[in-house]
Length: 121
Image (cartoon, rainbow, N blue to C red; front, top):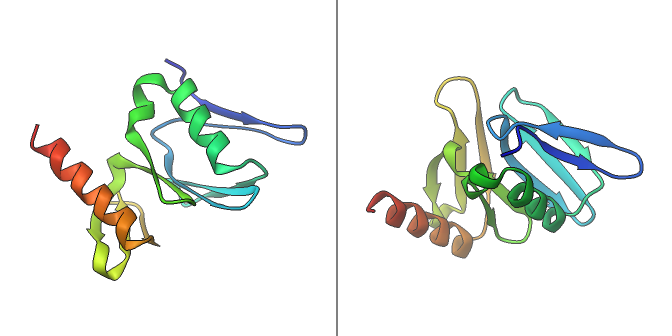
C-alpha cells in the first residue's frame, strides 16, 4: 500500500495521504482537491485519471473513495449527511471541517443506499 496519492504531469507534482483527502471536484480538464485542513489545490488532471490513480496507489484505502456523478469523488470516511431531495451532501470530521456540496438526486440516492447496505453487513 502506498502512503501517498501522487499526481504528476509536465508542470506539477503533488501528493496527498488518504486521510487528508476529503473530496475532489472537477470541471473539464481541471480538478480541485480539497483537504482536511481546508486547503484546495487545482490541478490540470481529469477526474477519471485521478479516480484510476486512487485505486492504483492507495490499494486498500482506494475503496474509501467513491465517484458521485460526473464531477465528484468523496472520501466515505467523511460522509456526515445526505439529503437527496435537497441535493445536499455534507462531508465533515465533526470537529475541524465541514464541506457542504451539491450533487444530483440520483447520485445521492445511490450513495445513501450504498452506505445503508454497507452498514447492514
